[in-house]
Image 1: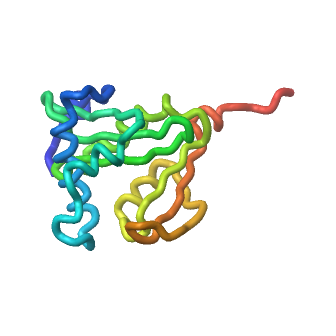
Image 2: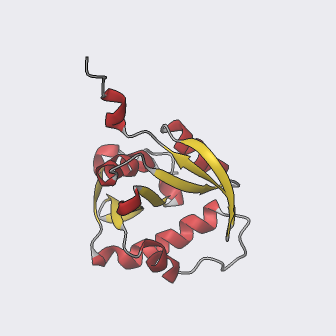
Length: 158
């Protein structure tokens, strides 16, 4: 883990010039997070498949992408959130989540592999809760949901 000043991290829209760096970051992050996966299970092209048709936000530090999140906007579904292992636990994930809020038109959902305890704890610390569990191609996952931030501010007309 590196020490970074959050003021030096910007969250911005993806541009095509980010693709190669994010492909490498995707593989490195998945290899670190999914230690149970076979060596070589994660490929550079997995990024392209996993983010096709999605809105992608990039966290950048010193002109280098250090994380990204992708949202399937039609379903308010957070499909990916990955931070390079060297920059985890520095607030980058929280910044990416906050940036995704503008793409959620309903209570957002995400899937998290049940075996990925650090990710589950992170999402729960950010207000997400488990609402169901199912089996998928990579193993058992939990479906999580979060109330939209502005929903908690609504009051009943009186």
